[in-house]
Length: 426
Image (cartoon, rainbow, N blue to C red; front, side, top):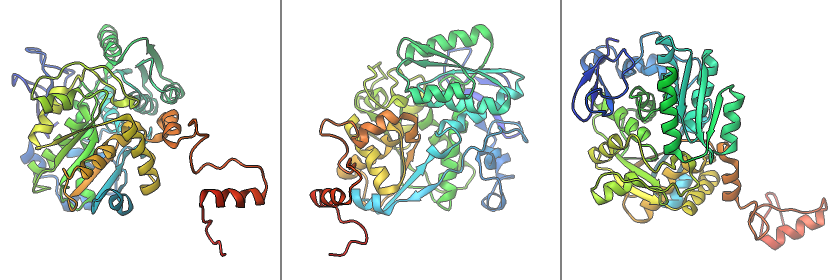
């Protein structure tokens, strides 16, 4: 790969070739980071060349990805819409709020970006089986990508994983191991099995190439904004891989001259599981926390990529925001009714953080803000029903009317609830 120099340990600086299966530093065990030849990339990539490309997927940025030229997964991943949401922005007091809806990827989450890289590299390495541990989205993205490429997949999930996500795995033909334990225990078992059986390791906390896939969301945001970097980018944080990838994407763009400044990151975690944010706020190392949140995709008490996450937040001059499960559910409703975007709990967590930051005046009203919705609401229908209030003790959601097929009863129910039907003249 002419565009890649090496994989470098972020702790001790040891360098490794970027074309082998080295995932972590052999000297100190640290996480590796992919280092590019930016001068080479500058000679091959420009705004004009990008504008002429018809491939609206992550592969339009091939020069900034650690794969061989001509290599690519089979599913169409990336180029999700970036909506300027004036109604939502007005509701929370922001004039320039954008929503990046990554729930519209093939398996309905941002994790498809990382899995596309994993599948491509697994094929190049001659592997026939890929594996990972996941709370759900990374698992389904890998299973779907592997199925499209003719590879087998083995997925380890904690038993708390939503059934909708487990069902998706089975439909994609994955071998699924539901582990009677938390995410940390699930991860350890997957790591042992991967080493024993020689499968390709898709665990983003271990495999440094997967953050390179996740960073493509930043490349798209910049291009969709006319290569003007936003002031703030908000997203949910669990294992730390995604926020690290988002930051790497903007830094790569800056290094090759496609943007002239960098945004600040807004790291949003659930109050019941916020080890990364707590470490930033206390200026201390990351310490394990219980996984007490309904946002299963970010319920990670012991982040495996915490060092990169901390570095990304600090380097960007970032902000940390913790939100309750109730605030996450409220953000799901707000995204739906004000932007037409259906996010799962973890997907809506970034927006919940922006709502809170705007209310606290941490983010200026005229700032350009992008909130990344990382997963679709259909991933976790049970939580969506909770957000909608369908099964509330009061008898259901306030805008769910249960009546007999009688027009008089309908009219009476409208009047009782103060609903003015469209086209009603009185």
